[in-house]
Image (cartoon, rainbow, N blue to C red; front, side, top):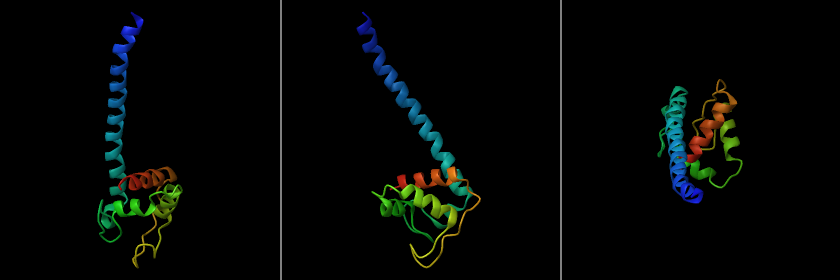
Length: 112
């Protein structure tokens, strides 16, 4: 009888866990987009294509397979850079906390 009960409960528990994870992910997306918008990311970057700087999907493709990509990109977001994607430099964002820069970097890398 216990096995039968467990067999009925297990799929429901899995569905609940999946639903909660999906809800958390859906909540995180607007938060990270708001952080990107607040810091002017969308002024220069599109999700897919180039505006002034590369689209986030292009950045994700460039760093694909690089295990150190998140750290490199987080530093680039905070410190700025030039010459990687063309002549126009990316301005630094020193007011971003390390954790925020890492979250933005992870989000950009998932865009591809």
